[in-house]
Image 1 (cartoon, rainbow, N blue to C red):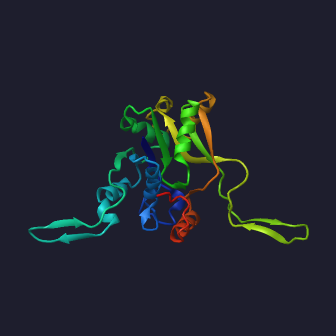
Image 2 (cartoon, helix red, strand yellow):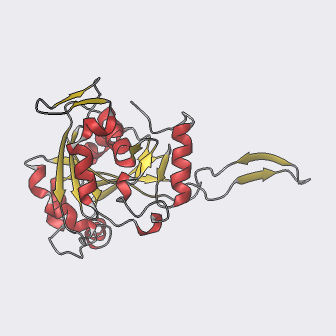
Image 3 (cartoon, rainbow, N blue to C red):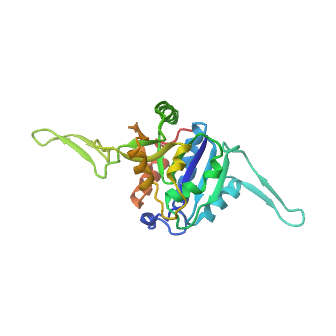
Length: 260
């Protein structure tokens, strides 16, 4: 099953981390967040990717064109008999990655419409953004989608709390403290979708077409969107604070999204 990843936005709110890379290439540990997202899908058996490129898309192309050089050791023999030897192997052998230029200024709906040809005749495909990580059970999500027969399944998550949560007794003594827990109120879109190809009937090639506005609202009006509830880990990388949080989890060996 193909996985479409929206990688073309300009990531204005995380420019304080770097202005030299597109957001999906900002690293968690030594590799881009995009790699972590793809590894998560691959852990569930999904290794055919279509990347919708835009802002600084050349950096993403370079990463995959030179994947072995970026991710492993190599020996270069110089001179007339020049030679390049890569050492070791990696678990990404067999990944099929389509790198599609979808425009510098295109919005999310337009980007998705422009990669329709790479979906082929597949009836179902997955869709996400290049900046969010999760421990989502993708088999259960896919089974849920196939069970209801609607055009789109959106994963509903509880947004991470911005501040620590405390419980205290009547005398003021703190009885519980949780640092930035998942919120216990309503849900937001976690950006992990399962899509029927009929979704393309709600899209067109207009540069300013925002998937999350007209198309998704039309799906709701037609009764064609379903919510898959996910109560596990979910975190986007939208700000410097998020960047530090995700890198801290990875460095500490406690990254919940690592399912490989």
